[in-house]
Figure 1 (cartoon, rainbow, N blue to C red):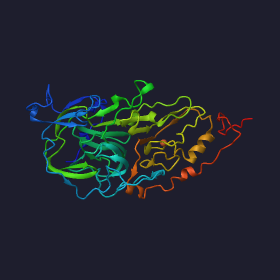
Figure 2: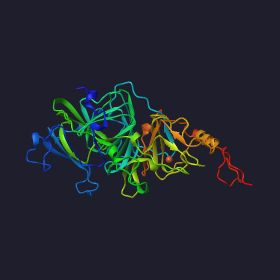
Figure 3: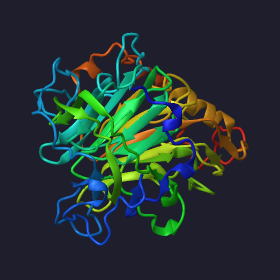
Figure 4: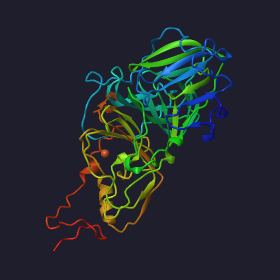
Amino acid sequence: MAPKSSDFPSADSDYQSGFGNHFSSEAIAGALPQGQNSPLVCPLGLYAEQISGTSFTAPRKLNQRSWLYRIKPSVTHEPFKPRAPKHEKLLSEFSQVNSAINPTQIRWKPVDIPDEPTDFVDGLYSVCGAGSSFLRHGFAIHMYTANISMENSAFCNADGDFLIVPQTGRLWVTTECGKLQVSPGEIVILPQGFRFAIDLPDGPSRGYVAEVFGTHFQLPDLGPIGANGLASPKDFLVPTASFEQESRPGYTIIQKFGGELFTARQDFSPFNVVAWHGNYVPYKYDLSKFCPYNTVLVDHGDPSINTVLTAPTDKPGVALLDFVIFPPRWLVAEHTFRPPYYHRNCMSEFMGLIHGGYEAKADGFLPGGASLHSCMTPHGPDTKTYEATITGGDNVGPHRIRDTMAFMFESCLMPRICPWALESSYVDHDYYQCWIGLKSHFNPNNTRNSHNNNGHPEIQE
Ligand SMILES: [Fe+2]
């Protein structure tokens, strides 16, 4: 039963909007019980089923759960069995046994999309990560290259939440809460435990996935910015209920559980939810709606100013995983080195590029590629970018960065790298060369900042 374009929402108004709301949606009016969650017999003869995204006793401000009213309950399936053939490139617990560490700066060229038929599940592979889904603390960064839709099957990730960043090809995502259409330039969050299927209407597709264990994504606090700015809650879109009731013989649930895949058969679609309500939901966000804040006089702000979503740890201000973007924006700072500064960070930074170029790299960092700068590993603009910036001097005026969307997954945990990612033929072994040409501009007689117009430091008399 191939999905059709008309099955998927095309306008924002086809969704519910908001972040962290208690939503409700009915595909048939009257399907939601009134006054209680679990009546003796639900309206329309549906089964009531709760999905909990936090422990039952989590504080109210963190508690996430939804009630699904479905034609048959999820439990109606044959036993799970290890999937054959085994998926060899997924990890949810990172240790010396299965992954390596390397503090060097690593960059990957865009991985080719395979010619042989590959769906989202088979095309998904872990790149790096830290911690453990078993211990409910950690993260994994994956990528996918795929070209066909999932067929007669749904995926369920018992390990954590997926934040998917498509780079090439739209995703038609069918979930238990309804359908989402996600284009490159948008992201979709599929929380732990939700069953979903991904169709690829454009064929060849590629993208990035961050997975967090034991927590969920939140909007960052805004502090002195005030009540508005960055990602606005109203721009997060949540699907409306839709359901399938036809018999689906041989339908397969693929469960990722501790990084391993298991399958179970059932004879119906898991997308049989006629109505639902709650605050534990899949959602999407269009990155072009982000309202960036930035320096308006001097210096380069820390990249945290562009945080879209954050998955927190228990330590205030310390992220298990931040999702940060580098969107089109104006650079206006005076007598300032405008690209990102050279730095070493106690956090680890994985970067990807959806389209365009990235301001700190003149070349080599390509759409669909990636880089990893681990904890305390130095990095910053390449030689070409540095030289072009100081040669440009102070008289460059306001400059608009256009036609780009780079992003970063940043974590306080130290990532271990999967062997297939470290040994991949797409590793750019010449990456270090982009900094080797940085030459000394040291002049012991110059004690002033450069405020002149030719970019060369003035000599103080
Ligand atoms: Fe950095």
